[in-house]
Each structure stands twice: as structure tokens, then as C-alpha cells.
Length: 267
Image (cartoon, rainbow, N blue to C red; front, side):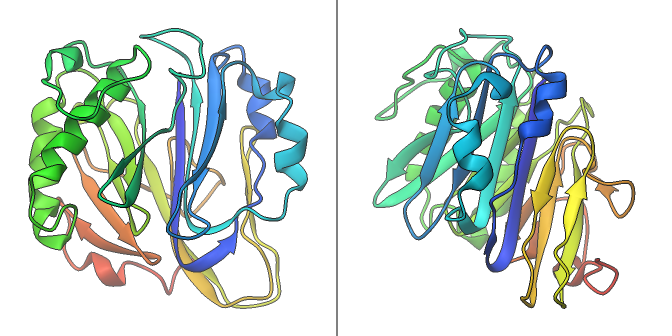
């Protein structure tokens, strides 16, 4: 039972959140964890095979104040393909023409390894990394790469490859692309967040805590497999692609007027 989490904010926010509470579920998610963020144009990535609570990195991440970004992607893994190695642990990263992309997936895609590869090759053995390499080869041939005019094309491709179970997060450092399985497997959720006072705000449940910082005026969208608090979350529609950029939903394959989606109601 893998878990995904990601966010996009209007400006960099304190991302020194803890996934320590995933330890209560690490018998289910015992095969790896990873965290990716963009401190600037470059991608920072820390990941490790094994359980969070036995990690040598966990204490450092829980106290490190330098994880500050407007985009973040996190993943904990229960393997269905590949092995319990760092190479097979999400998120995965690749560079294309000076842009660093990251990708995380939960689900199983039995036919993914039938997809042709070009310049990008997997390091590990997962269906997820194979799909990511194939996807970037497709994107490399698009004028404007992952710019606005190609968002419907990305949605169409993800739907075509969704023979199996596919929930995924993809980022180019400017946008966060979030796709929910066409069959409704596992569900993805999102909610808007508005920071407008001195209060430090946290989403908390037994699995994950995110400290969103204090003393700033900022807004954003958080995406997670399971809601990180009791209220305020909306469910992705089946087969839906959301594109998040600078803290707003710029595109939905299934909704209209998403650019002004409920920021007033965010808390």
C-alpha cells in the first residue's frame, strides 16, 4: 500500500515536514521512502530502501530547516515490482535539456515494460521507472515540453497507459502534475491552503504531519493519497489530471474554472 503526497505553493514555504508517523504503518510500507523538492531550479532528492523509523536520515530531516520549496513530492513504498533497493525507490529523477524532472507512482502497470525506450533508461527494475523513462522520451518530442498547450496531450497519454493501476505525481520544478487512476484505485485527495496570519498550520493524522510554516501570506494546494486532516479535502475524479502551478490549480481534465478553486474556503 504505497502512499503519495505532494504540494504546490505560490512561493516557497517551509517544508520541514515529518513523515515519521508513517512508522506506524511501515509493516505495510516497509520497502522504501523518498522526498524530493526544488530549493531552486535544481532538484533535491533523498530516498532510502527500508523503513522510515529505522532510517539514518530520518532524525536529520525532522530537524533540518533548509527544506524550503514551492513544490514537494513524497512517497512511501510497498513494492509490487522490482526489489527493496534504493534504485527501485521513488521518487525517480531525470534531466532533460537543463530541466530536472521527478516522478512518483503507486499502483502496478503490468504492461509498462513493453513501452519502448530511447535516451532515458531505468536504473532499477520497476514498472514505475520504466514508465517515467518512456514518458520523458515522449515529452522530449513535444514543442514546449510540459507547457500549457500540452496538458491535454499528457492527460491522453496517461489514460492510454492506465492499463493497471496508476496514481502518479510528476514535476518539472515549475508545475506539479497529479493523475488519478481511471478505475478509481486507491483514490487521491486534494485541498487548498491559505496562510494569512501568524499561526503555524499543520495537517495531522496518524500517518503524516506537514508543517506549513508561520508568519507568511501564502497559498497552495496539497495532494495526498489519504486526507491529512479530518476536513477540507476533495476527491479526484477517476482518470483526472490536475496541473498545479504557483499554488493554484491551472488545469483539470474534468473540471472548469479551477484557477479560482475555493481559495476563500481554504484554512
